[in-house]
Image 1 (cartoon, rainbow, N blue to C red):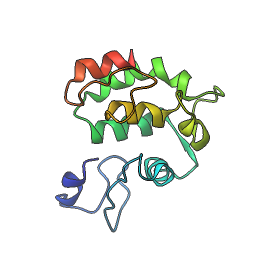
Image 2 (image 1 turned 90 degrees about the vertical axis):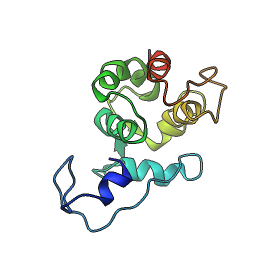
Image 3 (image 1 turned 120 degrees about the horizontal axis):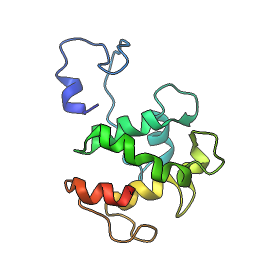
Length: 132
C-alpha cells in the first residue's frame, strides 16, 4: 500500500493481510536494486511473485484501478511467467525484454526497447493498452 497511507494508519496492522508490523520501509526503485524490490514485493517470502502480489504493488505505486488491472494482467502474465507455473521467479523477472522488470522500467519511462514508447503513469487508459 502507499507509504503515506501506511504512515498515517491508526493501527499497526496491515490493511491487506491484517498482520501486525513494527516499521515501514520504502520500496526501492527496481532499476536501483531489482533483487531487494523483488523480495519486498514478495510479501509472503516464498521467492515467487503471484498475480495478487503484482496487482498489490502496481495498485500501490500507480494510480490505477486494481480490478481492471487484474482483468488485463493475464495478457502479460504468460510472457513474464516463462515456465508456466503460475508465479514469477527472480530469474523470470530479470529476463531481458520479456521479464516483469523490463515492463516496470518501460512503464516508468526508463526503457523503450521492448514495449515501445511508455505511457505516462497517470494516463490509465494508455497503461492498460500496454497490458492489453
